[in-house]
Amino acid sequence: MRRRSVPTMKRSAFIVSSSALAVAGTATADAAIPGGTALVERRADFDEAAFARIVGRPARIRQVVESVAFNPTTLNNVKNSFNGLQFGYGYAPDAIAVAMANHGSSTAYALSDAMWRKYRLAEFYKITAPNGTPLTANAYYPAKSAYDRHANPDDERGMYQDTSLEMLQRRGLIVLACHTAIEEQSRKLVAQGFAPSGATPKDVADDLLTHLIRGALVVPSMVATVAVLQARYHYTYLTLAF
Image (tube, rainbow, N blue to C red):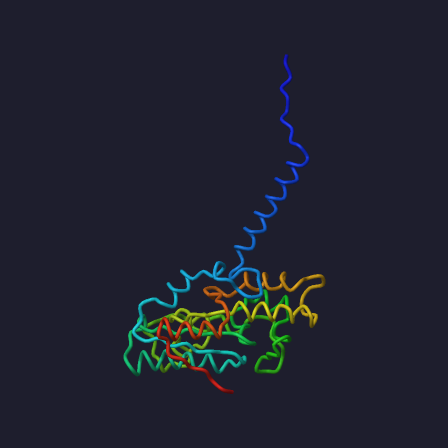
């Protein structure tokens, strides 16, 4: 019986092939990170088509609310904007587009419970619950009421008085997360000892960017995004001083 020879590969060819696979694997992994892995997001890493589809959806009136300093009163104002436009001015709910432009410590709004726990974000951002205790989860996300478009807008326990991000998203809120802010804050999380031992700023940034609340959209520099929303998509601008 003749023995079949097993094809062999030269060591140099094996090294080249292995290196190519490693590079390809890294590129694939980097592509899975919203906005990419660089400190400054490049256009090639920005999902501009998704951004255009979401912020440019048909609407009769558009508003961007810039949120920098973390203050939950902002969510109440967003709720009031939806209510005023719908019930006071008579805009149909699906004709209203409101975007919340989060950066600075307000980046925390867009991060998942797991990230709040892992990086002690409440302590890092100096956010406390109404009773003064540190938060261990994103308490601003879960809905506090049932979704019912026929609810009485004056019902303080109904959806129209619910300031949670989840309910506001159900009503059409677009939650934006700043890639630059997350990259910069990742460096601080590592430097100030909030990241796990041995974690690099890249590790932390990649972790945060891939663990956002449902529906959050990563954008390049938020201050630039606000300008684009105004100039290209005709959003009116609101910011609140606390």
